[in-house]
Length: 314
Image (cartoon, rainbow, N blue to C red; front, side, top):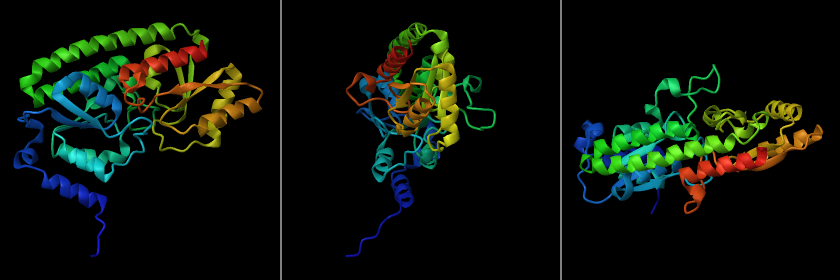
């Protein structure tokens, strides 16, 4: 028997149109949950999954498509991912073009079922751009804990709308989680203030930490732009090497979801100029740590980053 390979887009269309009810197609934003079991939620990145799970508690079952070490800028959905999305009751993602390769799929999702981009409800005047020439906002909001609190509230509101019978549970869970995030924000400010101001320079592979820098008083320098899809040039490396050598910065950082070679090139370049700089540790930027570890939660990830930076730069 001859087998035919079905294109990914055709598979996607078949799955979604096949599972689409009249109610869903006509007005997906107004759907409310009528099932008895946990709400099946699929998210893109782990940070969004962590929000949904903390807000939803036992009322939701959350599946993140992107695990530890996965770069969302470059991630392409697999047929298995599309199947999970087709079966979900709700979809949550970050938005602001973070999940660039999945943009078409996520847009189609909005026409099929309740889909929420938690970062896109944050007021525009609170968003950053990498420079004056780009049309896109920086999507890495989770590194300003106060802004991620707004994303948490967006997830709460979406769950309340979809499942009003559990509204009080979602509100109570959110109140408790927001208090933990306030404590996390205070911790970050207190710990990072221990690093002398002239040493508060964070050099990483790409511009994931601009919100972090603005929120906690750190100068941030990235080899790449907002997306890791851009290429690192020799000129980029030389630019960072010159800054490190001139200002005697003693540590740079690798990221768990970005190859280390670009930062290693910076270290070698600085040494060739007579400045000994070291890799101060691994930071979590676009992905959290492994499930079951402290860094596999949003709070644990941020604390790890703060502690690693303070230890290396203090």
